[in-house]
Image (cartoon, rainbow, N blue to C red; front, side, top):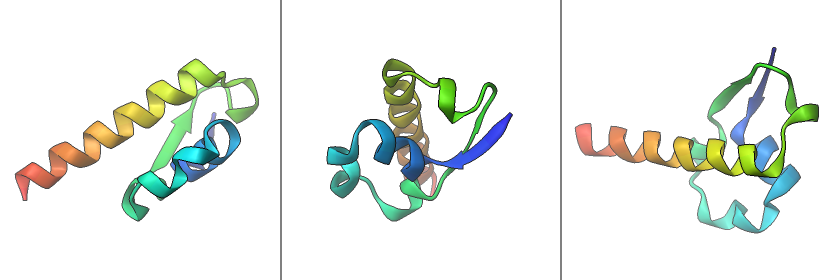
Length: 62
């Protein structure tokens, strides 16, 4: 297992998305079962999308 920031995932596969994500999203800690080295682009996009949804749902609750 490996823990990385969402920003690490974004920078590796989709750096063009960086300006569109908020700082709290980019600082999210993501636990990867098999590590970042084995993560594929499709999986990375799914993680990014899920993280954005998670942060949006917290915004509505506050």
